[in-house]
Image (cartoon, rainbow, N blue to C red):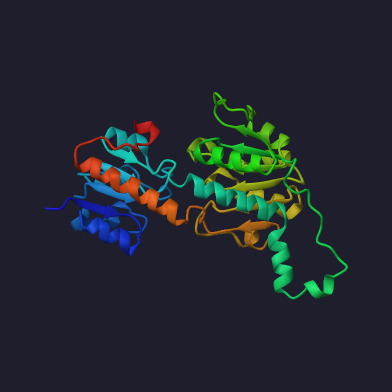
Length: 317
């Protein structure tokens, strides 16, 4: 008899086929809550979810046979780790499976926001270029010689740093503590990093402790010529403060792939010409998705074979 698993979100037809060949698959049930768990899925041994979905103690209690919560991506901020640990439930995630793709995308946002790419595209598409032959686009500093500050020098942050260095940028970072053997300049406070840098890239893992870490104070420190890029999670940035800073010119521009209440993006933010906005797509590459799928399938195989999965979240290891 195949082991029962529950999907908290829709997966590709190919992935579902791979799962159904091995397991009894239930769902998807979007944003799983205790009252939405189908009766036939209440004995699921595994919940496959994503970090942004709330997976709390009440949901775990509604799935009494649950032994593994497998987060498809790298994030797991929605999982109550203490509740899982108390119930003996293992929690896995994709670790650095998508780090290269996200770092590539982060640099794309850095370039687009810093070099006014979308402003130029809008001008061209509107047919305004022929009328502006004698008028240049506003001059911008470019990236060479600029300072990039990275908030969170993990798998993604390190890859962003190497790419920024290739663009001849000076790199500094902030995190919980300095990293051994790292040549980049460490800044003990996020505000200090913002004061130092020209471009601030948010690549930190989202936790309740860093909710709205990028606030009005940090944005003011970044300054009117500064650029903010966020490829971490929307909750790390105070979205209202950021919108205000962009509207008032307190910072120059922003590139955002993540938002505080996805998929909702406030109209005021969407209306800003100095914000480059994308729908949480940094990890949407074939290589990243294949790597994430493999990590997840390996976790399920290990769990049902009685082995400890290799990709447990750090707090559960």
